[in-house]
Image 1 (cartoon, rainbow over the protein chains, first blue to last red):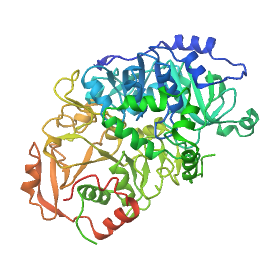
Image 2: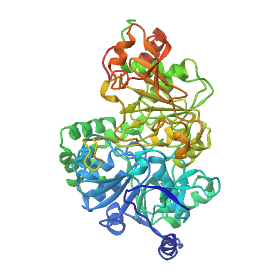
Image 3: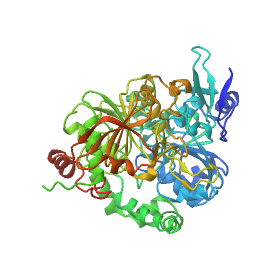
Image 4: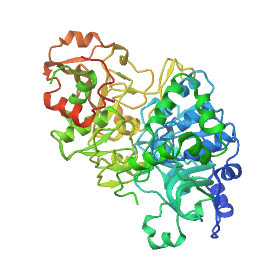
Length: 322
Length: 264
């Protein structure tokens, strides 16, 4: 196939056979209890220079408990997949954890924009859809997938995509390389101790992210019996053998919401926005992450039971989320 | 009720009027969400909104809460909850009629920039969040509608960066030659002062209408290029009492979207 146009952006790519070998050797088929604390899961499964992907956003069912733990443990030089990101990519960069971003949609506020303008954070252009498509390719074990997005745009020029002539129909089509993140972070409504996981409501790419990632950490608002999974298998989003760690994390998506369980904390986001605009994200990071030992301590001491109960009360729409 | 209104209210009302009932519409973040709800409350109760995180056909609850992209009030009473790969596949397949997007910068041929300003990509003068899902929406949907503030710095002869494709360089079949789905492209640009389309031959942006009371010269003076001007420029009704009542009392009483711009 002739390459007609080639993007100049750097990208991560792994040969499908290397991924197959990893899946054969490292993904456990035995039913073992994978529950860990957030601290232990991040210590074991997130390393400096890892490529990190996640599901959904800091507004809705995002794995914020795990993001906070990564910041607390001061991981460095992460490459972050900002496919539908809002607050978390900004926090990771502000905390010095992340030096490269695949964009998507980069984040909330001006902090990240400034970091890019001043050359401290390197970006490769993609789109939300082509990043999820790259996860699909990575999760299918194929080297690339075709798309009719990106074509004609400068987004393509600064991506890692290639345009080829479709060998069947003869028209130009874009190919995006498979993406196999080192780490996938997914917050779910429910999981059993083995990692069978359920998330309710629409999602960005929970299953594709789990399939594509070498190491998968699930954080769950609720741990359920394995027998409950078997009683209603249509509700399983992610089967256990893709999952490396299960973190029990009530309010793990805070300050975002989890549909049907609790609403996002608008007051918290207002505080974040104020500090972000003032260039005071260090204050935010210190208050909610670095000065507390865990998410539980943060929820108890910085948020409080009254606020958490109020967020539960506000989650009045339950249809479809159980 | 006073008939003073904000620029956002103008953009939202003009956009909502374009959306026909029983069509599918890919809805972007912010103002497009409010415009789609307004259309549902007036002439298009069965407008099927779809979102990049996979919700199909919700009837979003009001009052509209800003930042609920994907949350329960945004996804309320949907037809289906899918995911990003599925919904973009459906758009790529040709099932989605309208795409409704905001934009930072646009040019004569409807190319959209939401990535960066400046001549050097490596050292942008100003960086923005990037495509999000806009590139897909602008590539796949049959008729793309762009909502933006009417400011000279936003209407430029050539965007610094084509984040999402319009008619590219304006040459015949430029989109098809690039490989984009045939018959797609920007259809309308809705601003706080005017409504534009695109000439079917030259693909140049064309002034179709101006807000009642505004001279077309004033609208054109606030653009950094000269669009074509339709033979008969329509006078656009300002937001009606009904539109304003629904916007202010039902959809956005906290004025999180409609109150973010100046008065007209």
